[in-house]
Image (cartoon, rainbow, N blue to C red; front, top):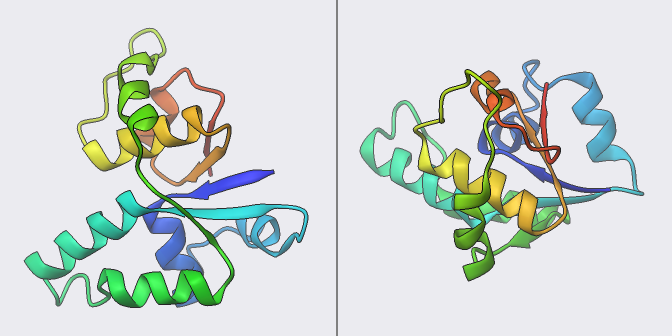
Amino acid sequence: MNLLLDTHMLIWTFLDSEKLPTFVRNLIADYQNTIYFSMASMWEVEIKHIKNPVQMPYGAELLHELCVEADFKCLDIDFSHIMALHTLSLLLGAKQHHDPFDRLLISQAKASDMILITHDKLLSGYDEPCVYTV
């Protein structure tokens, strides 16, 4: 499977955090899966790091290095990802997520035939089979 890790999943992976579910650890360790990180996550981390380095002590440079060392594949942002934003479907009664980075991650997964692994419960409001909330 092609798996796209959201920003929290990436950070938790490299912090060896207990917040990272065992199920996700097993997916990452399974050699049959290809693990991706998005440039959108790098952008998000760098913005948060610049804004508040105490709360986000890791910048994009370090996170990118860790992803490359772990042999994760980089998913750049391309025009098809931007255009997929308007195709995202919500479940009846669900509210659109206001975080543009999360919406972009969903559209990247959808346009690139990947599964987005996230902990963000708001993303389960999207009627998109590419979103897997843990």
